Structure formats: C-alpha cells, structure tokens
Length: 143
Length: 143
DNA sequence: TTCCTTATTGCAAATTTTTGCAATAAATTA
DNA sequence: TAATTTATTGCAAAAATTTGCAATAAGGAA
Image (tube, rainbow over all chains, first blue to last red; front, side, top):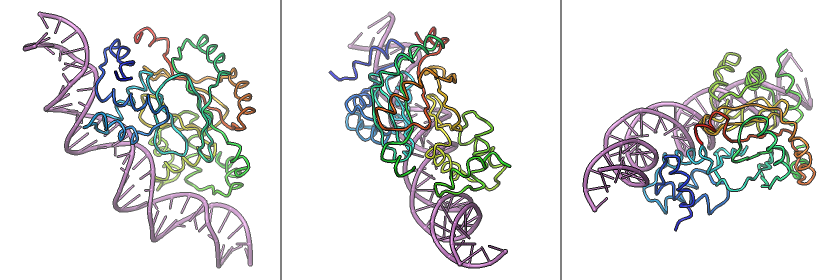
C-alpha cells in the first residue's frame, strides 16, 4: 500500500482524483522529505509512472501546493522553485549570500500565528516561514 | 535627485555599481511599493531606461534580492515570481484557494525572530513571512 | 580630465515553465 | 461489470527565464 493512499481520501472528498502520476509525485516528495526541484521530481517520479511528462509535473506541483499537500519554496540564489511535502510546520532560515539554509521547528512562532488567525479571520493550515538573512560565515565576509 | 541615489552608497561600498538600469528598476520598485512581476517591472522601468532588456531585469532583480534591497515573493496560484522593495519588515497572509492576500505588520513575530537570531547565529536583515491559509470567504466554500 | 580595470549589459540561443485542446482514465451510477 | 461523466493527462507550441560571451560603461587612479 503506497504512502499516497494517505492523501487519496482528502482529495476525493474535494472532488479530485488520485491518479498514478499524483501518486508517484506524492511518493517522491513524501519519502525525500527534502526540497526538490521540478526536474528532480520528474526524474524520480518517472520511475514509478513511466510516460510522466513535464507539464504534468508542473501542474501537479501547483495543484498539491494549492491544496496544502506540498509547500513551494523560492530559495534566493537558486533559479528553480523547489517543492517539499507539507508535513509538520517547519521554517527556513536562508542565507541571502551563500544560499545555505537551516531548517528549524520554530515553536516560538506558533503563539504569534494563532493570534494572527484570530485577528485576521484567516485560517492557516500550513505555516511556512522563510527568514532571509546572513549566516554566521557570511557575516564575516560580506560585512 | 533620484530615489535610487539612496541605494548607491550601499552598493558601491560592496564593490558594485549603480547603473541606469538599476536606478530605473529601483525607482519603479520604490515608488510602487507593491509586488510587481518581472514583466510589469520591465514595462515601467523601460520608460526611464530605454534599451532595457529582459535578461537585465531578471538579473537585476536577483541581484537586488541577494543584496537585501528587494524581496521576492512566490504567490501560490500566480505563475510569476513577484518582487517588492525591501522596506520595513512586512508579512503576507495568502489564501491558498483564491489567492487573495493581506499585508500586515506583524509586530507579534518580532520577539520570536530576535530570539531565533540569538540561537542560530543568523542575522536577519529582512524578515519576510508568508503565511498560507484560507481566507474567511474560502473557508465557507472550500470547507 | 583621461586612462584603466572590470562589473554590467545586450544579444542570441538554450532551457525551463506554461497553455490549449483532444485523448485518456478515475470514480460514480446503473 | 458496463456505461457515464468529467477531472486529468500528453502532446505540441507558446511564453517566460536563464546562460555564454563580446561589447559597454561605472568608478577609481593617474
């Protein structure tokens, strides 16, 4: 039983379908856990879903993002938009100079987010905070 | 005196140059204040810098982002990456269903960010928090 | 001011991403 | 199980973004 079946009920409940292409892409994202570029996702998912095409990869990734199953992340310095499975909330520190990134569970942010939900009326299923700055190493170099 | 001269010293101090193309693009971002797509930026900046080309726009935007003068933002649902001048810290609430966004000054986050600077060693020049969720209207529709 | 160094640009081509539409296949119903 | 509906895919072409490299021009030095 594929890990993608975890997600199928959620999709069906909204009138969407679980296809072999979506299964393959979810499988790749789920097991990698990491940020992957569309090209990497295409290469890996193709093994499980032969005949998979690029347009499908792009459309699926945007679909998953809109439905909260994947998180897109634009890393300054990398040209491609990367995607990651939307598991527990996680947050990124990215160095704007060297591009190195650090993933943190930012518990400190949660109370602030809850408070904002209350005041704005928005409901946040996934919070994904990207903080851009300078890592310790680049603080020396770049001043 | 153009608003871009504000930024010139900072660039020169790092060994970069203030060109007419960068001036034009900074001018556009500075006075719009809003998120703009590369195409919008190209159209507007071209008026001040005739001969401006697309590759220059893309390269300049990435350059400004790397140097903390502009902030990129990927809005789920929009294909193009948008850029905004990096003024005071601001944060976005984006509805993952209809794409509507709300810009907020999220003072509540600041203490958490300062704390993270201390623990990680990263220094955040710009914090740019994008929260993805459902706006009140879409909470009814999308369940 | 003129010269010099090299960061930056424009051009043309390559690559990546998006789009329109007919063909396919997932899920529901009979 | 077979038929039906329509969400989803693949294909081909369009559009957006990136890259390599020679030409240009910003800023410092003479």
